[in-house]
Image (cartoon, rainbow, N blue to C red):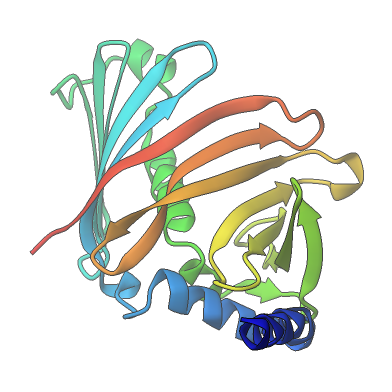
Length: 240
């Protein structure tokens, strides 16, 4: 028993040393190996079912169909009795409000419906649910040094990420478990000196084929820890 304990202590002692020497590209590769071990993200064809819950009790249910090889994205969301479908099929954009493509100017404005917003929603969902794999995208810059940070009582390996100005202007931090390399937190700032922006706590896992996606994401303001909402990935399916 004492010999086993000594071996365990030895290997536990190695973890800080190994983590300290790991490079940013190596950490990202290990995180991707954990979340997408078979490298299927780039050819993904599937559906995500997401429930967004707000502190005031409201809910928004969304169904997302993704076919990356065919450049197809469809977001169907239901909230307060209205169903909105936003479809991007390569260069074509189709918007539907309660089953009709004939949408009044009033409803377009009230529900912020436009093809530009549909594209924004596509980028939003593909980015967040494609992490950490999306950190390999062109225009993404990893700070060379991996940081060690304590967040909410746990120590993490942290990647600092910035983007080409055509991609995005925010500064992002991604927090990975130092043993499994699972992504457990991410955080962004518009202006870090002002402590603005938000952090997102990730918990539980939902599998989509062999991809491990965070099941629950809890959103908070950096400045005051105010809870903004929680989205839950209730189901994820690979389509044939």
